[in-house]
Length: 418
Ligand code: SAJ
Image (tube, rainbow, N blue to C red; front, side, top):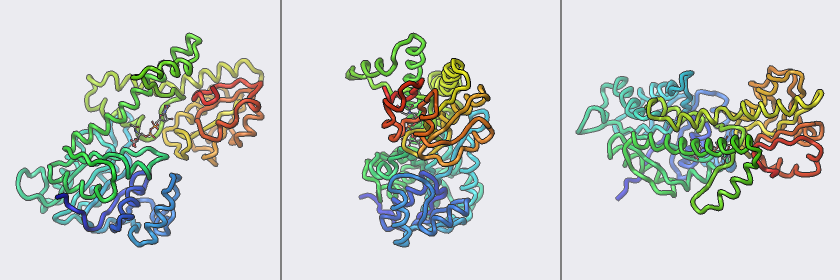
């Protein structure tokens, strides 16, 4: 018989993962306290408001807060379960920056009581859940943890990596299968009792290190496949072969699914997580490292192509369509489109560049220093441009086809007007 979770849940980090998780649990009638270091986020959440754009999230937050099951706080209160969903970026040398995780653990440790569980959802290098346990053991020598060996455990630890896709988070958080890795089998079972509250997908119990590695493997798998598509694109382009036709044909093979090439691979996960594998095994992770390098080179290649086209004109105007890291989201973190625009602006200060994105209403900080850049509406940008560069396949750009583009040089990095 599976345990049924009862009690209060604290979730540390009210971002793209923590907040939807809070809504999913609170909606099942469990009291959830969402904790964040940003007072604006906490105040907005207390009013039932949310600044992130994600389908169905705002309505979920509003409902959970109105029902009284979701509250927000800057401080960590006592609870039965603590879920850590904070960012894990990398340092300059590409090793994981665990400072946010450590800060969360330092905040949680003083309020821990016997029977509590600490769950790490943030993507981390193998061994991090054990490290979290060690930090707690150091901070709270009065509590028995799994690193003390067999016998009674006061505090339980697990890694339950999120695997939701931005743009489909509220659906996938419920429907996806879920990997739940415990430092001990009892830890995994206790963590599973929380995810069973809302997850309709299968709950797959394992050990913490396997769960950590599985999450990294998932995103490295995607990165390697994206690098393959991008490399096929590069080679086809140099041979004057239409890559979209190549992929269309190759994908008619029953066991081939080549992804779409693009201006690079963005977001806060895929360009980051594979490096955690590389730094765990630098001599062995040859393919994973090469994929990262191929994908990181894409924005440079795209920018070089645009500059080459622009040099054919006298005082040309370039419209760059799309700034977000992928289609139909407002997220600009690690966006290759922004890299492309910055590289073009840097290479040709004399160029007039009009940037358009229906999801971005102010020029991102990273582009703020270029005098030759201006934010424009998509239609106006295209109208004024000699060269149109499609960087993100937002739905609204699909309808721009034909008439508006005729007579212009078009560089469609996503193949939507093919
Ligand atoms: N992209 C392409 N061509 C494609 C598909 C994507 O160039 O055919 C680009 C996108 O434009 C974007 C990047 O790849 O710049 C990543 O986008 P994505 O949609 O592949 O993935 P994310 O970053 O939104 O979410 C990934 C997902 N992981 C996998 O699919 C293995 C998601 O399930 C994870 O939860 C998420 O990372 C995460 O948080 O780790």
